[in-house]
Amino acid sequence: MENHNLTHEFPELEEKINAFKLNDETFKKMYVNYEEVNALIQHYEDGEQNHTTDEHLTDLRKKRVHLKDDLYSYLHQN
Image (cartoon, helix red, strand yellow):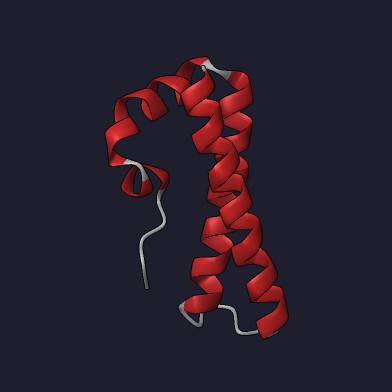
């Protein structure tokens, strides 16, 4: 499965991501939410939890995209 870790998605922002995770509470909450959704998707895609529907998995993927967009915007505005 494809890696959607935030530092993999935005390698040019890795230092800023790491600094914000330590020092910015708003970013930290957004980041944790993204990582939780991403981990859940990975579990479903890996077959570790096959108790979901395609529709639910699609909804989770859409949520991940929106969270990633929000994080990207936040990183560039701060």
